[in-house]
Image (cartoon, rainbow over all chains, first blue to last red; front, side, top):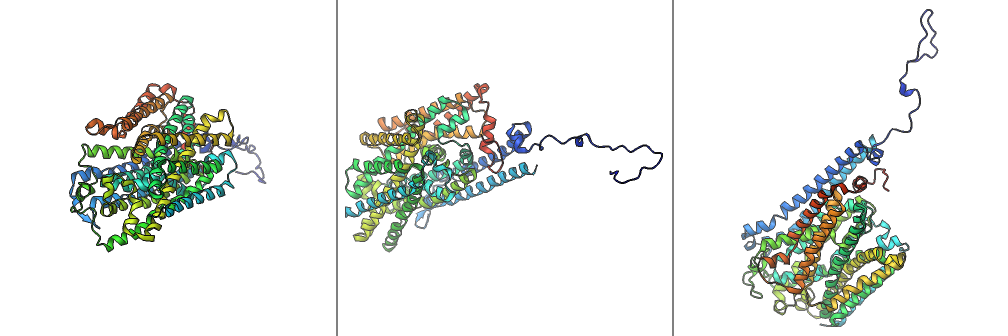
Length: 132
Length: 505
């Protein structure tokens, strides 16, 4: 509310300007950012960092698990299904073709997926930190 | 064959390496340049360099020889050597770069605030580095003898000399360009002759090397092609233990780790690793094909125990004439580049550690690095000259197992678990290094044939790695009051993206 240029009505008490105590004097320095909270290792900073760490660790564990469940499962598969060695593709046994040629695209695909997700986690973290 | 071609190829690779190394020298001026190329190598170039450095003689010649001799079970080696980068990518690549340390001992000290763990890490880096360098020099001797007629000791000495000259001249920066060049040289040297060989094979009727009728060294095509060593006592244990060693050992190899510090930031470290995986996958498709063709065209190498030279022999036998000589020369050049690249990387890594922890007390900066490089090369060369006959892949495999049982737990727990203490890391490193060190000595000196104990010692990773991890965790829990005070700040530095403005001191 402004009292600029308004004539005071006769017989009524003078208006008192009501302000929030916060605006009485300028705040000391800028509001703390998430980055400074993290720097100060405050509880808040720890929470943000822990969230990032958890997301990245979950992603890393899931990537390594998928590796274990795909390529890591091959020895057991070859052990249980010896027929993969007697059946031929391109002149070589299926098991051979899978191992010698098929593993590498899977590895690159897993790596690509990991990099994309890890960068997304970091981008989201950066956005949160900077927006605040 | 005409050995002039082989000598010519070795000379060309040597000159090209030295020229590129000297050209790189124009950019190398500071100590930081020497150690880690001032951390300004972009991901594409860095990935070429990492792949060029990683693909050693064991990959270029050894895999094909092993596949020829033992068959499908040996395909796990290249798969494991590639998959190790996926594990490295997922668990350590970006945080390792962000840790801001030069070497593995630097990381250990920064994370755990302990001089003792630092010293132990330095000893392990040098041990793993020399264990890996020694077979490189030996393998170079064997390969160059078959291609150029040099005395066995001369090949190793030539490789050692060229590596030393290069490292002395430019350190890491010039090594980056040299190794990037050597990746493409190795790929071309393996790919181009293979095209010709496959045409010859198709022209000859394209018989399957895995046909049951193809019997070499008493093994039918079926037994040979089997990806599990079903004739052995413990095929599943051996395969899984090899997997553990190669999947987890890659991140602990000193020459691999030192290259991560040359990335500009953590994000670049990830991009680099992704490209490395693609480059390695491209390369590792090729050697097994040489091994398979060797079964058809060079079966006598198996009975002569000379399977390591199958890659160099095939062009002579399948193409012959001048064409065969030229292709052999190309392969010889590639093999020589393989020995050079890996030895250079290991020398830089080992020299970095020796320089920082031993020599720098007496000498300064670049001088200290150069003295250390000379020591780093001389010792494994001497070991290679006096050691008894050991296969390249065996020793390299043990180096992987040792790295997996020591630095893998240190890195993974150090990066992801705040609770790791110096005492825990020390206990784990001693136990992991001790167990695998015992396996190394047992394998190289005693040698066992059969039984569970032999299988356990031949592939120690499957039990040594869990033992090391458990020891680190248990001892850390027991000494939890000694978790370093700054660990929270260190975690912040490891895991926050560079885009966030933080105090990274």
